[in-house]
Image (cartoon, rainbow, N blue to C red; front, side):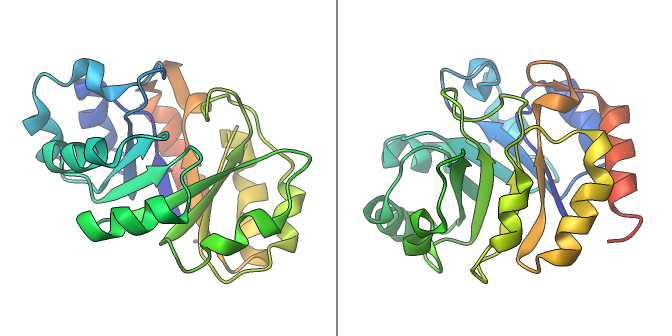
Length: 212
């Protein structure tokens, strides 16, 4: 059960997250239009490099040079591609960065698995989120029933509108879908954009890990 907490940017809130529940991964958003844009508070990037937790940089159609700079300056171990990045982009990224790649697919009522098929074995993980003009962080969930027809072995994480009340449903999905490796939580666990309710995150993680 991989648990990723995304949209972190407040240093004290980050310290609390790492000290108490400590998820498996922490996401930092590098999309300037996001209210959780981490670079707005990046005066001391050494703080982020020193953190004792694997860090995921979230990008939306960014120039590869921006990713290279962010990986070096923030000590990122993963990059999460949340835009319309294609296979050529991913191949170029592989050449210049020794990081794991998470490719996001935004799901709506018109979704078909053929859209993800070309990316199988080209990235490390898929992540399925809800379609939104803001590229995520909407707090809304898509219909998770579609995941029960997942046709690939490619591991994936689930995101989009996850709340503490979903813990049993998530465990059931993981039991039914071997390729589902965990979840990515964000806006529904916040006190304000970029500031998580640490007690809520801790309770949710405890509920999920009663079985996994």
